[in-house]
Length: 235
Image 1 (cartoon, rainbow, N blue to C red):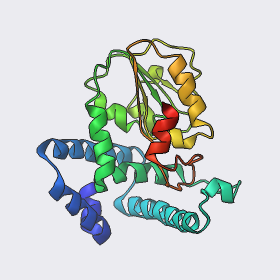
Image 2: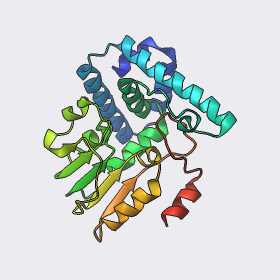
Image 3: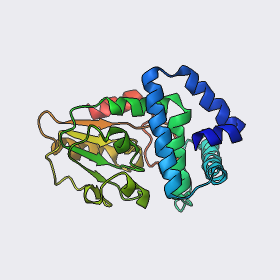
Image 4: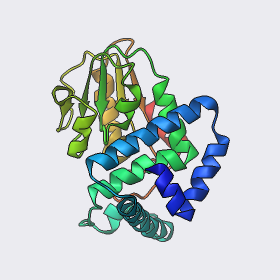
């Protein structure tokens, strides 16, 4: 699918070729795995390249408007309009996947995740499309994943017994590695979540998390303002 998009759209072509020139051999292999995941996603939803382009740029159009509003108001969309219209879920998920193929920082996040070990018993909170699990599948032995908003596609990646379409309640504490990738900014009280996670972690277990600052996406509820602010609060 990504090759079709590159051939049919000059904007995608530009960014795809730019990132391809900057990749190491290992990064190119990871990049191809993400492209395979995009193929799987599009096949599941029966998406043509025309539909993918329409949905992808639909998402970018909404996001561009939100960025303009944020520059002028310093407020996230939810703070401007409490009843903000939600973006089509497939459009949203496509944008997340494609961003890993077109932007270096998103690819590098995936790269760092694939380096995490050991993964004897893992917990994923806010699993989204399941991309991280797809990339780690050869290293995962025992895991469970939680997400209230994932589409049914996630069951193509995660066994039904290992996926919970609900919030994690902190009751199970027997994990060596916990993943919360691009999840914290979706919470109204992320530091309360981090505190609860910390209190249920065992000695020697670890939390792998990423977050964003000044990214006014429609479903982001908290802005960490700066890396220093985030790190000081976590300490």
